[in-house]
Image (cartoon, rainbow, N blue to C red; front, side, top):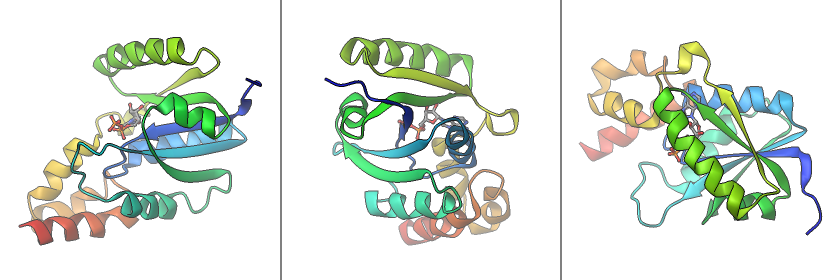
Length: 171
Ligand code: ADP
């Protein structure tokens, strides 16, 4: 197999929903690499809050000002997806020591599956290191009055309303 392009990176995750922490990694990654592909992972065994198409449009809106970032959905292994799009770097964000443990295991596994793919870690920015999609879903579930102003501290502006709308529909 020819060498993948070392200037192409891929950043995979569920992005359900995308957060300010994700956006921070994408912005920093887009400055480090020529091309950054955001890979939205589809897990057919999980029921996501936002469909793949909805997540594509939310992430697209939040990265609209980053010309070297593209968004794709994928099913299956990240390493297979990275090969398909000719990326040589798998970009990950780490928030906590417990993240590192998990990420380390994943990086070793990915390395044995695809030695040509290098995992690169960016430390979460201090102000976003507590943010996770799971936490945001919990806050949004608390209801509009409590959540709307506070959600802006966790998710990009374009995600606030769709997130609240989703919970209004569910409740
Ligand atoms: P998954 O749902 O597969 O765990 P996520 O969408 O939560 O994926 O995260 C994708 C990647 O983004 C992971 O490398 C994760 O550590 C990183 N990440 C998630 N939240 C943050 C954050 N607040 N700051 C920095 N990196 C983050």
